[in-house]
Length: 252
Image (cartoon, rainbow, N blue to C red; front, side):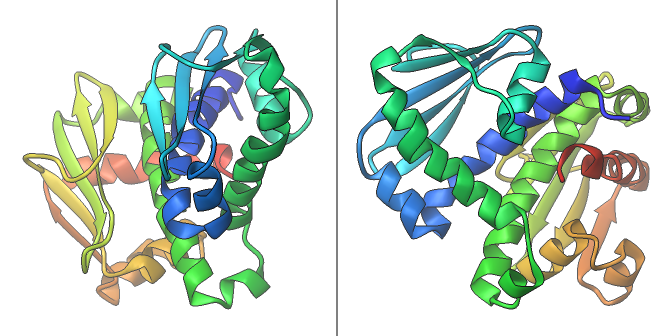
């Protein structure tokens, strides 16, 4: 069962965060990020706020409310979810004269994100596309773990059993690294390796990460083929894996 509040938190704090990587992976996204500077705030009733700062060749995810040039209001979690599903629109509280930017460059950005996350066999035949899909999926999935562990009923049950400490989730050979930190049954995720990891989950390369996240590769087969290396305190990894199993409910 999909909890609408959890889905909104995943959309707000996991999917939007993945937009940060787009300029490094997509020429259209880089062109938009190199153009007009705008900071878009997404304010969601019952959930919170987050911002995307676009400009100077980059996209930066900023948690929480703050300075912005456009402020979009969503009265309830379902309102944000409807926008991500393409069936609803926000209420602009600020930036009414910039609707053309939302319908133009920003819509293109979200379309490009969807292009890389909604795969087809034809797209996956291209290695560059597969790598982009894997990199964006990894960021989305790890941050979704945090939102699910703190909001979803089953996720909270599992997060409450996770021992305190940090887990490194990353890709070898210079690939992306992220962290999941448990403290008192709450999860916090971050970009970059944790200062001190109590456990680790490291993929051999982006292909392996993408295949597992897309469901093409079984985790046991990945471990046996040394495409996924696990280490450290096993109970933390067991719990993490259970929450990761819930992620497909919210990221489709």
